[in-house]
Picture 1 (tube, rainbow, N blue to C red):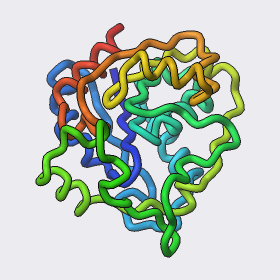
Picture 2: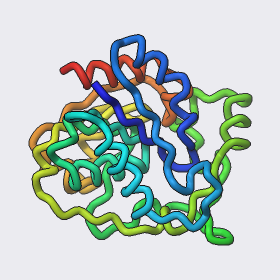
Picture 3: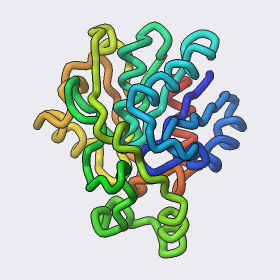
Length: 227
């Protein structure tokens, strides 16, 4: 199956470099997506630009595809399900919950000069970064791409209720499946609370399993594609 891979904040398509060969070996066709504003130097990119890139990649794939969104990009994967419910076979959300209609995409940290830079490791101490050693942290920080304000503060728009019928797999890395269910029940993601088919998969890692557990993450994605 074609598997569209969408990285979260501050990451470009190379975030999936170690996952891609594993998925290929498992018989799938992974497509890591280069998002506008995440690696191309375009600080004027908007959330609409990123959604358009996701849909263009999805439309170029024959038949239905698996759409994977990591962290904040869970919202991009879900917006793809909203815009193309007949093209998304399943949405896999890795360490993230889709934002509801009308909410900012990822307005989490300060914006400086029109971009939201990586804020350093202080906000991620604990379970998020527990499996990243100092060398890995330094590599991540040096490669981190400042997010354009037009992306981070862009407004999520959802229009087609058929998205609620698209099967969802929520991969739970730095939190457990039980914690995810509790967060959804408390209102973390109104759409996941209403979705018809949500499965949960525990993955013992921090927030960036494509870096620390690429083989295990690839196996989870392959199993989601084959289920």
